[in-house]
Amino acid sequence: MDKELASERIQIERKQFFFDLKENPRGRFLRITEDVGGRRDTIIVPAPGLKLFRDSLDRIIKSDQENSRIPE
Image 1 (cartoon, rainbow, N blue to C red):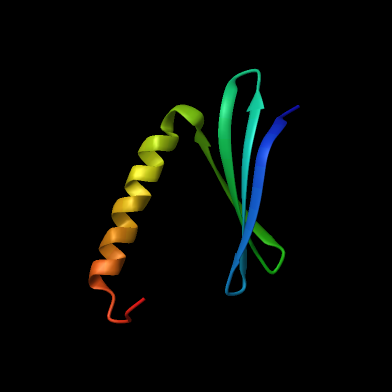
Image 2: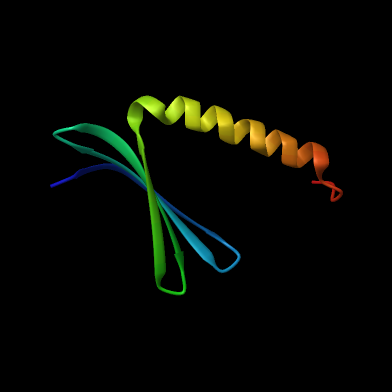
């Protein structure tokens, strides 16, 4: 059984995203679930990879901002 350590939910347009930090005997991990109209897709990121995952996401966000035609 996975132990829940933290959880957040955000809604973007018609999609809901769930971020669940969990732990089990094999270690900690982040479970990211996308829910669109009852259809769910999930990815799991092992805790040792969270910084690398965040760094990649930061680079993508920066690129999006640099290429965006709509000012924030």
